[in-house]
Every structure is written in structure tokens, then in C-alpha cells.
Image (tube, rainbow, N blue to C red; front, side, top):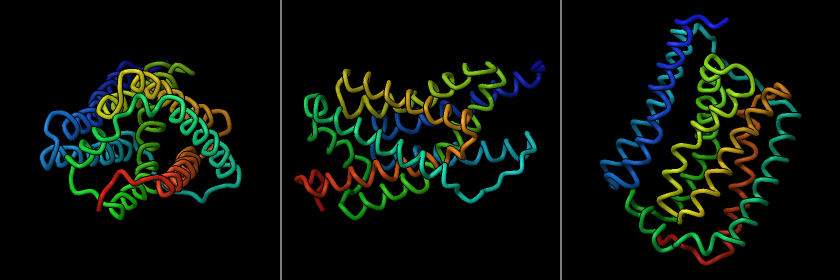
Length: 234
């Protein structure tokens, strides 16, 4: 049975962590786009990373470590990556061109700072190799563990996936119409559920599984971008 103090600590951890992502993207995309919003977003990202680390080590007494990837983890990542890539591209071809104003999206990206193809590739490399690991540590491990204290069982999967979706709703609202926001949010929520479910079902290191799937998605999307007229100018 969960003790009252554990429940209170779990609630406090979620209150301190979950809103930070939404505050960061809201500042950078809507409230103060530009240098101020970017600084707040970066600070929010650092908070999202270091608070769970400090909490896990100092409060929960976990020993954090990295381990070598296994063949099963990479295989699941490849399958999920190809599947998600197919769904993303199919959805874009069917609906994306009607729901996304490319010129408006380009303007919003430029408001966050100078944009050129090299910087674009660097940013995508960060999201593939670093941010995906950070997100899985935060949302599929730290946040999930706290949700599990409050709602044992599979309910924790859906609650953590909902928390993971919140800041993506804000991002989607900046770049697409309401139909895209609803469909994209559903896709993000389901992706969060799938990654957590894989971890619980197969005991796979979901951080590497997701990094592999995101790598494949980004790689193929970049190939498509190179073969299409560029929307970013040097």
C-alpha cells in the first residue's frame, strides 16, 4: 500500500516537472518569441533534465547508469521507427498540406532565431541523439514512476502519456490548424502509450528503442526534405 508521504512526494514531483515543458514552449512560440522566449525555453529544458536527476539521486536514492543496447531493443526501435514514419508521411500527404500553412510555420521558426540548413541539421541531430534520451528519462521513467505511485497499473501509462502530450499540444497549435492539433495530439499520446507499454511488456530499455525509432523517422523525413523545395533559406 502506498504511504501518504510517498503520494505527496509524487504529486510534488509532478507539479514541479510537468508544467515546465509547456511553459517553455508557450514562451518561445506565443508569449515572447525571440531571445527572451528562447532563454526561458532553454532554462525550462535544463530544469526538466536536472530536477529529475537530482530528485532520483538525492530523494529516491536511485543509482543512475547507462547500459549497452541489446539486439531486441534495436529491432523494436527499427520496426516502430518505420511504422511511425509511414504513418507520419501518409497523414501529411492526406491532410498536412491543407492543415499546415508552410509560410506561417517558417515565420514562427525564424522568430526563434537565425535558421539555415546547417543549423537545421544540427538541431535535428540534437533531437535525435540527445533530446530523445532526455525525454524518455523524464516522461517514460521519472514521470511514469510518479504516476505509478498515484495510479498503480496500466492507468499510470495513460496518465504519463497525457502529461507528455500537453506541451506538444502547444507546439502543434503554433504550426497547424485545429484538426492537425487534435490528430497530432492523439498521435503523440498513442506514441507515449506504446513506448511505455513496450517497456513494461518486454522490459526493453525504452530510451534506446525510442532513439532508434526517432533516428529512422528523422532520417527519412530529411531525405524527403532534400528532395523537395527547401522551406528554409540560408
